[in-house]
Image (cartoon, rainbow, N blue to C red; front, side, top):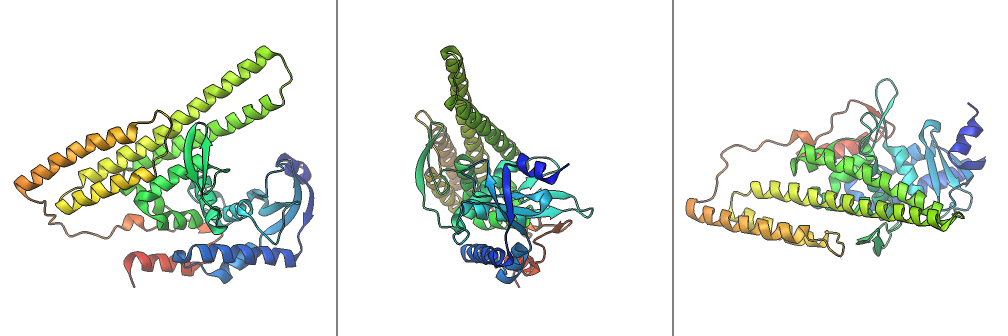
Length: 368
């Protein structure tokens, strides 16, 4: 099939290849931003620069005028909007470059993972897009802004792109910390998945990932429907039908989002509660569930978090009475290092040249 036809299907036209000078400037810009923004990852800026500079880069006229860049993985190339100032790379451009860094291939050269997205199971697309957008927003120092999205009120560092998915991801990171997420997003391993699963369950992680994919799909359908309504020139009756469809879709999005939030609250805090063995554990649990209120995203009639909080605090009071009566639980088992958090290298990453990064991770987990 003609390559120009394929690129037009991607919404790209009037394509011009960038010269080496521009490519090197972009690679330098992005590698510096990523290294400065995520020092805990111990990224090697030289290796990162070399990896990005070897990427084919073009400018193009884009069907989506709001798009800044687009990475086409089967072409191993990134296309920048002709209107973009290449001396001031923005969040969306970095977003697409991170996708390039994420690529992970098996021994047969088949692309199998992009960060948190497993291409074999087709699960984790939304979670990965949120992770990439979050890292890109941090690297460009985006300010936090308030937004109402489908009747959902939230503060987001990315109010225009994947705000609901980013909100869920922030809730998950409340339990895992930021390090596992950033590491898994760039190196396409299971550290984040395993860390969150250990604090909830494997089933919970999978269900959250699947529901997020459904959420992203529903948002896309709602956006397409909204665009259709904005240019609709048919009968008033048909227009009312389309608006009713859109309202139904918005309500579905709201319910789906809140169901994911509720699942995180339920599974993570229930696991934490079940692990309570001492009075110190109780204090930590009470502090953790109380502070989570700052991460809860609400609607006008949302009550799950408050209801859950009140109910589990009664259970905490009972558990405290049991500890007073019978004493603290002493774990006589010698704790083993959690090898589940260490990625098993079974595939080849385009970013795999940064072996120093992997060594730094191992050192971080096990010590020198």
